[in-house]
Every structure is written in C-alpha cells, then in structure tokens.
Image (cartoon, rainbow, N blue to C red):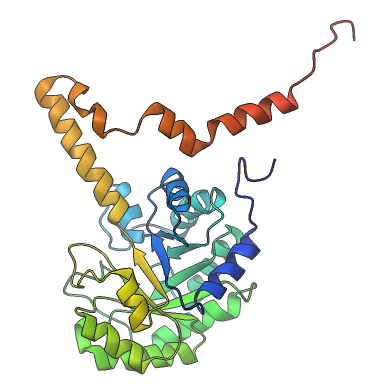
Length: 304
C-alpha cells in the first residue's frame, strides 16, 4: 500500500518536479513546516512544495537562529518531513555547517535524506537571522568555493542548490546582484536574495539576474509582504513563508495556555482546536487500520 507509512513519490521524482517547477510560469509556494504533520497539511491544502526553516527549527529547540544547530540535527529533522509528503522539500542549510568540505558533506547528507534542494548563504559563520542588522558576509571568492564544493559533491543533477546572499542589507542591491551573478557562474541553480525591502527592489533584482529566483516572505522583517501572484508577475519562480506556521502555532499555544492558567479549564478553547477526528483525517488513520486488517487477516492454528 504505497504512500501509507511514507510518501508514494520517490526522492528522485520529487527533485525532477522541483527543478521543472522552477522553470514553470507559475510560482512555486513553499510554506515552512515545523514538523511532518504540518507538512502533510501543506500538501493537502494544495501548495507546490515544503520549506524547512533553520530559524523555525532552532526556535523549536529553544535556541536563537545563530548557527547553533548541526548538520545531523537539521538533516534528520528534514528527513522526517520529506518522508511523509509527495512534495519536494527545500531546506535551509545555513552556511553549509563549516568550510567548503562541510558544504559538500551537507549536500550528500541531504540527498541521502530524500530532500529536493537546499540553500547555502554567504554569511560569516556563526550566522544570524537575515532580517537582523549587524550581519557579516564572506568574500565572493569564499562563497564561490562553498558553492563549487556543494555542486561538485552533488550526485543527483536534479538536486537544487540555491545560493542565498545577504549582501543587499549590507552593501546594497547592486552588490547583491554582483554576487548573484558570481554564484550563478559557480553553479547555483536558484538565487535567494535576503531582506529586499520593496516591490521595486524585487523587480530590480529580477531584471538583473537571469536564473530562477526565490523570494522570502517572512513576517515582521524588512521585506514588504508581497502576494504570490505579484511576485509571479515580477518573474519570481519560488516563494517561501519560513516561520509562518511556527508563529501561528505559538500564538495560539500562548493564548490557550494563558486562558487555562487563568480559568483552570480549556472549555472555552475547544472551538479553536483541531478536533480529534480532523487530526485522524490528516494522519490518514483509517488507511492504517485498513492496511493492518489486510495484513493480519488469518487465524493462528494452535496445533501447529
């Protein structure tokens, strides 16, 4: 019974689909998934891909997004998400968890985990959230070495390697464009420019760079929240909503906990909760029961 305990679509086919989507006229929308259950909802609702945010993952561990998580932690978490969906999964691989050789190992580990692609950034390690001030970036040559190591290590040519640059917020958009050109020449398949401010900024960047582009629509940051159809009209190929599901969940959790603390009961919160039946529906609980019944449909002969 394919697609029960794991996704029915192979990792190779997900990568083919993701690469094809990046050349499609339609924008690929990738909400961040904070766990596999969230990823299943992303798929059910009809999005084209799933994103795994480094900031959301580190926050879930009670840590700030400053490069404290490890390759093993990030890939293991992402593998659990990729396992349950037929959608391609793009992950945040920070700076590649070290020097160029570490970036190469990161690509190999992500491929083995069934992930469709990752992005590497040009910040100095340890990094920080791309929408905070005080960032520092490596030289163009250093980032090119990081990318070339990743591209060289790749075994599946459809695995997408995205280069993120944080230069716009430090040296300006023109500097970010120069870096994007160098990163494309180094083999990047997709460019992610962090912390552009306005629709005009996104348009300027699109006009200057001729490979697929990814936009980050994170809340409470430096970028205007531009609707997907406008980004598509500008010419962007993908958009991520990295921390949205975490913020939605934590807002609801905090509200609920405060009410229980104040009133001593959750009765007033029931209409805001996912019901047991809806949870089981998302989990496809009945399919597991049918599968189990189909396998264990015999009686044991005690005389044997």
